Amino acid sequence: MIKNIILVAVGGGIGSVFRYLIGYSNIFPNTKMHLSTLAANLIGCFVIGFLSTYFLNKINHDHLSLLFITGFCGGFTTFSSFALENQKMMQTNQSFDSFIYIILSVVVGIALVFAGQKLAQMLA
Image 1 (cartoon, rainbow, N blue to C red):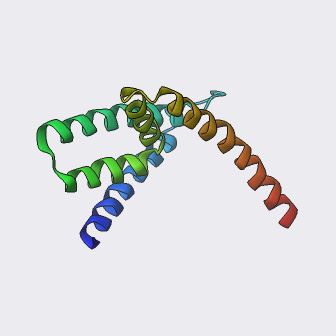
Image 2 (cartoon, rainbow, N blue to C red):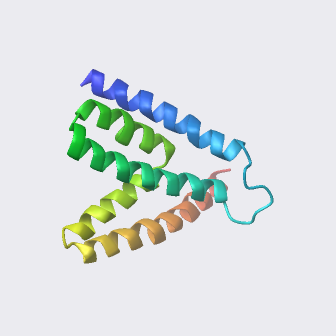
């Protein structure tokens, strides 16, 4: 169990540094959209899709999966996990559940950001 936690922590730390570097590099200056976040999310989706299939079909190694999928991709972007979970639901004929999950995650997630901001303003 401790080894698994260390693997996730190391991978997450590396993923977080890579995510920071994408934003810090300012490769998308003077844009209204958060293109560095979009880039991280899309790169993360590709990486988690590749790794989840590669590890499942070629290697089947739990430690590498924890390091790279749970750790690195989780630290780089949780959006990639969100996308993989939805893809798996769609693949197993749970499209309605996937649709509900997407709507709840996006709409309720944004609403909770506003709620958190309002609460912080009230307490400040």
